[in-house]
Structures are given as structure tokens and as C-alpha cells.
Image (cartoon, rainbow, N blue to C red; front, side):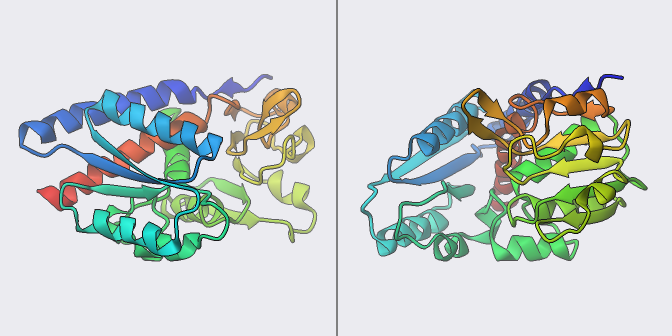
Length: 281
């Protein structure tokens, strides 16, 4: 058996095309979805991520603003930039590109973002909304994972789902989204005993630990849907958390690159579009 490879590039392109169509409808009503990104410093990876987000916005007809601050900016300058964007009625979505330069407190900055403009879904208010089943913004990567499962008609309700990793950005919101869709969810982490015995029970296995090749074939239930969120740079190139040999056991598998990654930017457009609807109409 060889797994069906989940084409994140295709699903992301379809998601972005729908966002462009919906944005055009808003624009005809006088509202242009507007994403503002705060970029502090000159981290090369961050520069690349921001360029990709800016390009995606332009292709979808969104307005995009990049607020660039030097690496030696102060905490007060960074916070003032966020507050300015909060007060700007033309801005519907705000994100602060992470990581921040050394010495800056990311938690304090993220807490200042208006929760109704928090299209990254990192604010504690939105985390609380997700935890209690209220409408709010969800982090883009786990939201993209759900979109991939739906695109390939992989059943969530009634399935046993295992999430490896408990970060606030992926693991915890991923588990809550699956639970909201009536999956039976187990969260695993560095303290989990006999991890393989847990993961072998999963109909849906999601790996988000940032350790190349961490999930091996012996950890996977035959026919399971395996979603690889991790991406690491190794001597031989980019690698995910799931070993390539898992393709011989799984029923579905996301490749790295080209699986979950493209969905993150696509869902950022989705969230920004929702913010524009809520704030401007």
C-alpha cells in the first residue's frame, strides 16, 4: 500500500481563488480587505515569509501594508506601532511577524492586538473563544489542516485523532478544532509514555514537534491519515516530522514541502476576509 499524497498546493490555490472572488464582492461594496504586518529586524526567514504573504494579498486583491521596524527598535516603539494599526479603521487584520529580535517581549506585543483584528489567532481572547466554542480567529496552520482533511473527505467525526505536540500555535488549537468536529482526541508530548502505542490507535495522526523523521512507520496505524506539520532544514534539504517510509503504511500523507505549508498563507487570507466582513459591514 502506498499513501495518497495530499496536495496542499492545490487546495491552497483553490482556497486563495475563493478568497479572491469573495474579496472582489466586498470591494464592489466599497471595502478592500486590508492586512497589516509588523516586521521588526532583518531575519531572512521572516523577510521571506512576509514577502509571500504580501504577494498572496496582492494576487487576491487585498490591500497589504508592511510596517518595518529596525532590529534595535524599542519595546515601546513596537507596541506603539500595533496600537496605531488597532486604531486604523482601514486595517482589518494585524499580525506581528515572529520571531522578534532579542530583547523584545512577543507576548506583550501580541496581547495588544485587537482580538477582532488578530488574524493569526494568537491572542488569549481568541484562544478562549476557541476553547469555549465561540466564534473567533483560529491559528492559520491548524485551520489549514482541517481544510485539507475536508478537501480529501477524510472523516473527522467519530475518528480517533492523535496530536503530537502541545504548542499554543499548532498543537492545542489543533486538538480543539478536532474535538469541535466530534473526533476523539488525544494530545501527546514529551511526557507521553509509550508514544507508539498511542499513535497506532489514530485514524488521524498529526505531527507538530519540529523533529525530522520523528514519526516512523511502526508508529502509524495502517490506512491512517498522517498530517505532517513539522518542517526542518537539514543537510539534505527540508524535512518533516514524518519519515518518508510512513507512505508505505498510511492511507493519506501530507508531503514536506507542499502539504500543510501552503495552507497557512491561504488561511491567513481567509481570516483577513472574515475580519473585513465583521469590521467593515
